[in-house]
Image (cartoon, rainbow, N blue to C red):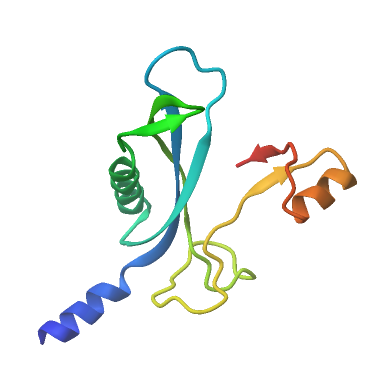
Amino acid sequence: MTTMAWWTMKRKQRLWYAASVVLFFRRTTGRQRTFPVWENVYLIEASNDEEARQRAEALGRAEAGQEGLKLNGKPAELVFGGVRKVVSCAANPAVPGKSTVAKLYDGIEATYSTFVVQSRKDLEKLIQGEPVSVLYEE
């Protein structure tokens, strides 16, 4: 078997995942009442869910630890909070179950979120990109 054939066969066994990594800002001095949070979604090619989770954690930890940050004018740091979720990218949203996507293409669903808003007015705000309270569900 040629190296190229082996690599092609090995690559077919890998799947695409979207991994949500939570990072937050923490003041390094004094009290803090609120915590600004980032949720970064990384696109990861891996053999299974666990490998994707491990890679996401490594990416999140690498992103954290930035020095010289300020939060409301006070010294702060960016902290790795954890990997919130890892989902396989769907080749066809109409087909349930794990994806077997070997090659990404335009229009593929990379990730999704599920949440509830309290009213039609809040729904309209959400759709328009305005601030609104949501109940985030997994």
